[in-house]
Image 1 (cartoon, rainbow, N blue to C red):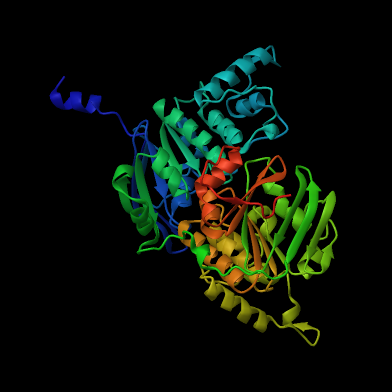
Image 2 (image 1 turned 60 degrees about the vertical axis):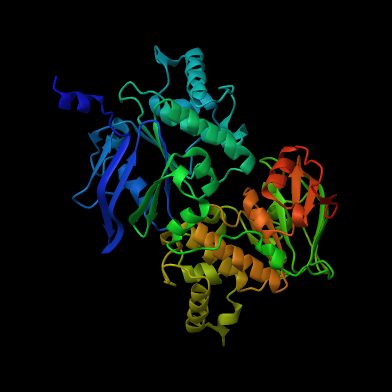
Length: 527
């Protein structure tokens, strides 16, 4: 064998090699000559703002979109057939999306068997073998769970782990998995559970699987990835080792300019001490247990807690979208009855739910319709709706919030996640509410849109509104909030204020860890 043939034989193909891939939609370039290489056993972060081309790349790899002629995609050295989902699977490429595709009412073992099939004998499922295979698959991602547990009973991190284990399950009809694509796997996870998932990702990479890791959370990139590819406006603008780039440099690559990251900006806000705008007294609604709090004009108060702590349901209970079992809620002098969000809106309360696609907006309706649907009153003239006035106001909000594309009649579904969230913010901002209840306001939003939304939140507080932010992102809470209330087992167990509001202190309090000497806490808002 020649020296040249030996070098070729010794060279292991990349888990993924994307070469000069482009994609055009209706004359607009979504991707322009993009190259990406993911080595075997590497965690490779793919970053970019909403609309940068990340989703298009993933959909091309999955066979949903066909790329423009000219480029190629190789998985473990073999060419991917454009537009063929079967080709991606046959080459050992697996995907875990934000929508995990799990069935809550079925067991872990059943969910794991949905793709590769159930072990059968004489047409009957071999339950013992089903459980054995499930335990093996779970162990491969570092999970030790009872295969008979219902998926609906798992924590978010465990659910994602089950989806990863299912994606990596061996299939006799296909080669071993060589590439795992994780699309925003931690978007809905509290910080306390993110580390669990990152540990699973490392376990997968250590088995020799290449991992393409898509995220907006930069902190995770520095913890788990070895290489970063940055997309901007459909172009690859950087491919750098994680060890050679700082957070500030990475943000500049993402947004294309020098950028001031939002950090402790809430310290600039004046804190008002007027009568409270919102008062909750001994509110209960499982798992919430007798929570009391007060929100005043100018307040930006954070709500933190791990999954199951009550954080996820508190704001919807205060708004009336979730039944309240006991206690009272008052906005200024107006008492709010349980389960009446319409009266909460009339009293001046705005509620931004955590899932913009299923709870916050109407994806099939236009940007204009989503912005104005909650209050058409200002546009009625002599028993007729003034579309001209409606469009004028919507256009002003589009300009103010830099919604892209600036198209009032575009369906909400055509916008990126960050721009969808801007539209939903505008829907409430135009009503000039007294109290904002914001549940995961920047979840799945790129860093540029996140900073813009943060500034809108702070501007609302400066204008005299009271703001409550429930978030699984402790950095977001530390940047925005004067005070953070930490929930555990349905109750407020800690209230951090002033200089004590740090991401580390919030995380420690969520987990029940000792905050240590020198960390200040106050008793405001503790029931």
